[in-house]
Length: 371
Image 1 (tube, one colour):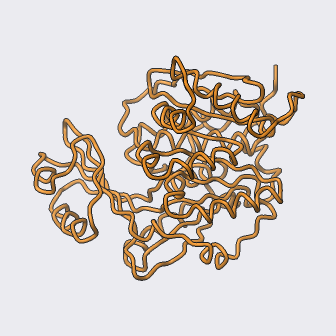
Image 2 (tube, helix red, strand yellow):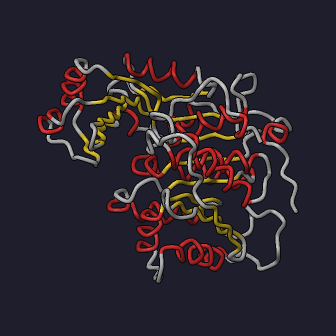
């Protein structure tokens, strides 16, 4: 039986900061609609995601001011994961374990987003692009539907020059985490980060994030998967990745095993057993929603499956479930846990977060997450 040292007891051994993430920082707005009139007015997808130009987003936001339930939160996949991970490790913010980088506008929403993330304890290194608005995502819910509306604005720009100006030190960094959305506009930055990570023996973690980005960016995604030590994705995203790599499979649960095998063959990893499971071939973590187990595969097709943990209170919002699982899993990596413990903790964190609207964190971490 492998002993699992409690998270915070393990984390305190680290120099800080320990993880840096790159993604698309967004300001999330949550609105409960009385009916679907606004969805029809702006021709928004019901139970889907629609991208609107900035001007239309402004009109929609003006209309939403009339709605009674209106909440704002920091958003963006990697930014969510960093806020959660920092909260898990130290909600007092005496130690700042996380750094986050991305593009921001020079406007009131950017100021609001910056304040929200800074007060969550994350060390933010935004690249400000004054000619673009801060990225927005609006979640519109009715009794029967949920629609997302987005305009990424300045979040869609992050250059090599921005990276240089950020003056980042990677001396204490253990993990560089990159979200898939970031590749759609900043692949050269991602490749530079990979280069620096290889020079310093830093773990690269990568999230596939969405199936639609494979349409125009599958080459960059596949290349990034080749670089990464850890790859996260849900079943639909793993299917898209398998298709892009011409990997045939009988069942979706075969995919992480096939990708692990392909990765070992491609990078010519030795079959010698390695105590460090993160260095031995590719680690693939696949989620399947609330009804099927999450799967982690590593090494020579070693694996673990963890059944989703049913919350003891009603589910409110599943939007941040994947970001939460990533945060819990990477917290376990920083604590040097074994893969099974990392995945179990990721599922436990996700189970807690889906009981809250958006990724809005309480002041204190629940006792059952303080392992």
